[in-house]
Structures are given as structure tokens and as C-alpha cells.
Image (tube, rainbow, N blue to C red; front, side, top):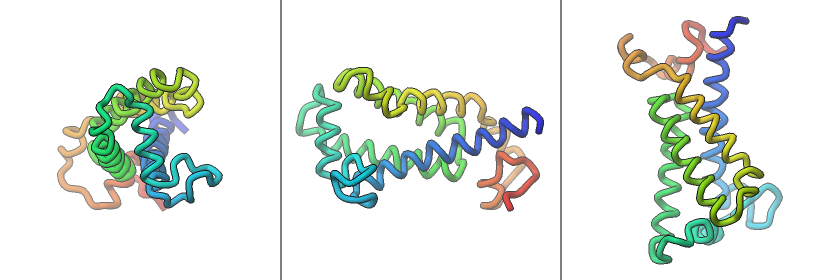
Length: 163
């Protein structure tokens, strides 16, 4: 297996890992992974999530916290879906890196440096940066014309399709 093939596989894996991680976090805040206090559940419902957003963003006026929680959820949903589908890979990867760095900074300030390290937020940030650097620019991809849905999903595998 040559380096280019390994890079193609790594790009797909990173896109899916980051995208699914964002989507699982959203599922957690809506209680789809279980109730608050259940195994592997951080929030379990919207109320606990908003309380966590308030802890991390204590410098933000309390009246803006619910809106910030909604905005964060919308951004994570958009980035998660775009990562999974492989849409605008470079822009989405770097946007994900910016979001993850904002998480890491607010967690570090509010909870100490151990929190983002324990939750691998800096690792996810680095992965998103690497994904952005390794992504093929969108202009180079679109020069080939329109693509089918299968080509979108398997775009990192070149001429091979996922079987």
C-alpha cells in the first residue's frame, strides 16, 4: 500500500470520526443516548447541556447562554453532516478546527487544562487541522464536473468505489 492510498484512507477515517463525534454529542444533549447519569452520557437532556454551556462561558451574560447553546448545536450539526458527506472538505475541516479550539480554550479557562486533555479536544483539533491541510481544494474537485452521491461519499478513494 503506497503513501497516497494511506492518506486517502486516513482522510476518510478522520472525516467520519470527527463528523460522527459531533453528531453523537448532539444526540447526547437531546437524550438520545440515555438519561443524565447513564453510562457514557454527559448531558442526557437539553437542560444539563445548557447548564454546561453556562459553566464554560461564565463570561457571557446569562441571558445569551440558551442562544449560545442553540448556535453551538446548529454549528456542530452542520459540520458533522458536512464531514460525514465529504462536502467542502477543506473549509469544513478548518471550521471544525476553529470550533474545537474554542471548546478547548473555554474548557481550559473554566475547568482547567486537564478537562480538554481528558476529553481529547486538543487531539480532535489537531486532527481537524491535519484534515484541512490534507484535503483536496474544492475548486480542484469541482473541475471534473458534477458527481453522483456515491462519488461524493467515495471521493477520497479515487476511481475505486466502496464495496
